[in-house]
Image 1 (cartoon, rainbow, N blue to C red):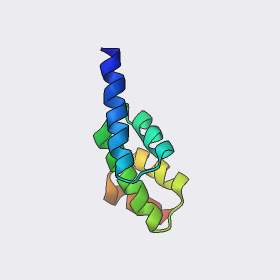
Image 2 (cartoon, rainbow, N blue to C red):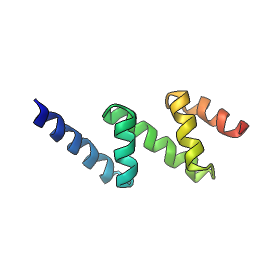
Image 3 (cartoon, rainbow, N blue to C red):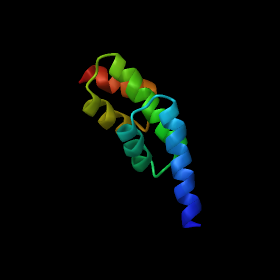
Length: 81
């Protein structure tokens, strides 16, 4: 059972890495969202989007966690900072 969990984690990380995300960010996102690939992928996508808009990465992470990856709510919070 434990081996299956490890393999599942590695496959999820591999899929996210193939989407172009950095290894450290993938590992951090997977841990933050209790190894949910879907939630980690949402987080990484929004992180990249907001980063491209010029927001600071540490602020983006904080706001996304507080807003539960809700794009509009997170964007509103970032703009108000």
